[in-house]
Image (tube, rainbow, N blue to C red; front, side, top):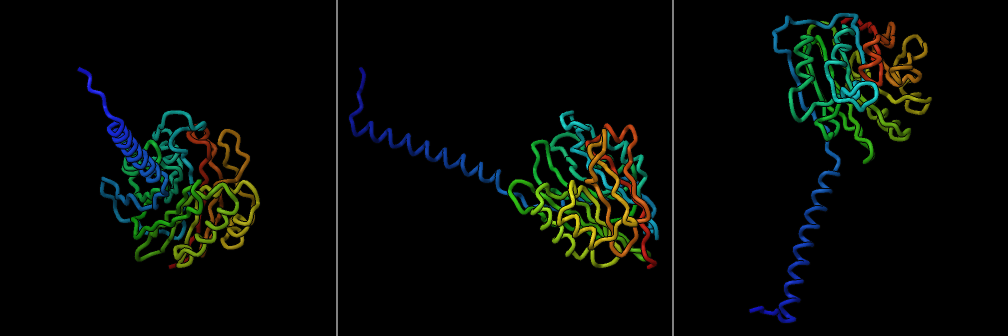
Length: 291
């Protein structure tokens, strides 16, 4: 026997269905908003190499490098991440301090940063800028010197680009060195605000410091003029082109110093570097003041 619902029962059933659909829609909107809410950057990792190393004091001359590793995806950004490819280039730099940008720590599998730090016998700090579909994306600093302190600057001034700067301090009884690794925005107005915030950070005003990273300085804008005016360049010479790696034309990757002197700077254009990322690493010698 078929029992037919009355008009009131049909209305009640329809109302219940609409309420359930509304709850499901609100849940989806809430989850979407949570995904789209900008994540506050944070210091995710400070690490010492697995094999004990003898203490190394900061000397009066150091070699530093900056390298955008392009999420380990090679020159075109479409290849499967291969940290070993960029890791080989990093090992060839043989620098005392290396600032890395667009570093991907995958959510699954081994951590390439830990493997790299252990292989090179270097200390490591990593700051998350945003969550990537494959894991955490951010800035890292590798160093032969133990990390004395580390902090993160939030440089996100738009919902489109989430940017940070990682600031690390090295030094003990001898010389001291502050290092800032960053990846600035593509938009001029945002990049100018980011530079203002970085230049006011204590790490660049208390003792010798080096600012390194992908400055996205593809043209002479207010941000790059502020950096050139506030921080010492390398004898006022042209910056070496570092992008694109296969045929460098733009000087996006730069190394600045404050209360220290950039003695020389060059882009490393080895065959391996031209394949490992869309950026070439940039290497510099820095003279620090006497302690």
